Length: 604
Image (cartoon, rainbow, N blue to C red):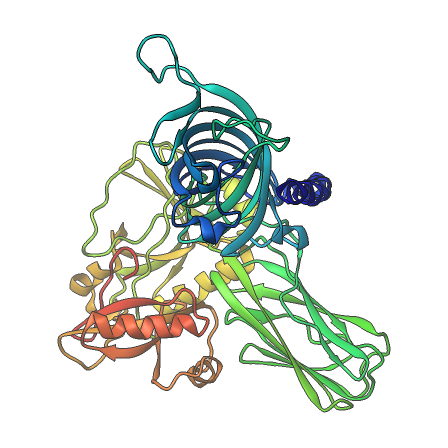
């Protein structure tokens, strides 16, 4: 019976082996192939000449012993893996009819392979349970002895020396083919729980120290183990530019498949301008239709005529109306988009409605926008009250401007000694030819150069009010591409280190900060900041289903939107986490003291 079972196991296994190996030739680049180590322990059961029972459950009482093992392996494909294993198993059995019992110790050295059965039908890196087959070849080193049950007299043994006193310095050798299977349960990022059972079909009849009949001995080892994966965490895959994003599930109705596939460039950054495409699959549906695309805040649509539809764009929502949808079963909607200074992972939702089917079809994806990184020579930041300027030793310094918040109002300046300019570039110990700057950014006004403390600073324009300078700076940023331009102040011809110095020198010229009428410390959650653009706070409430008041604060040419008025950081954390769960991935906490926003480095 055992021999027949062994033959069936071998036929089934090699069928799976050949099929999975051919699969490996097509799948070896699809996974993060990993080394692992496994430690296990379990029960061993013998099948041979000296046994009373011939099934696993009946053997549990008197014919089951213990073993332990260690395995080192590597996944070399989505289906295929190889390993080396050491197993130390104790075997025992008895046959009452012949007054025999035996004990054996087996040291097994296995070169094996595993076949992931689930991945034969498609891989999934996030799957938590995997089912596999295993086989291979094993070298066995064992010693065994048979004794009488009634008298405990030695009948026969293998693997012991017989000269003088009995010693355990010698072992018999044999070979085996393991055939079995197991389950892997993912516990954590690199940890797995492993349950496995396999029969070892040996070429020896000596494991029970009794040679009888024509059948060779076999034994099972069933174990519970823990595996540790040595691989590093895989970085997020950087997909090629212009790759299509398909996260939608096609909807079938009346024999027509309705689907929308986004085609969005992958490598986007703040201020980019690009073409956003959507492929619409509608089958033979005709008649009036409407497409509504709710774009991430900060996306400005530049086109006015799109896909032959009546176009309406308001509050970052694009509506396309067709009195008769295009006749093609698949047609494209594309338009130009320009980004504000936004970044992070932002949601994009579309709703497609056909009057003929009287149904709405929803599709969504996420758009990743990278924060713009300035060139090697950039503008020098305004230094706030709390900051200390430290001159760098590098030839060129990269720095990002820090803007002081102000309210949107025009200050009346009675003093003619105050002058505002727009700084476009600065370099440390690296003078920039003025003609190069003028040519690069198409600046036709005179560029002024200041030199102080090893710094060369380049500014343009001369304005009596901050508001005039701000308007010109917006033009420099939007039309000339000087994205890091910012405003600097001069008093009696001398450049000030910070705008706040005007508080003492010319109070009426200083653009005051936005301030709430409140005392003590307050926490709010910032959900959005837009440069040279704005959105109705009510629209934000509707898009993200916000019940709280959305505050709009104006800082230079920025508009920042916050929610909440929390007395504790814990309250603000709760609001932040809720708003993140609704799709505002970059929401963070800001602090106010006595109604005034506190400047700090980093997000809470």
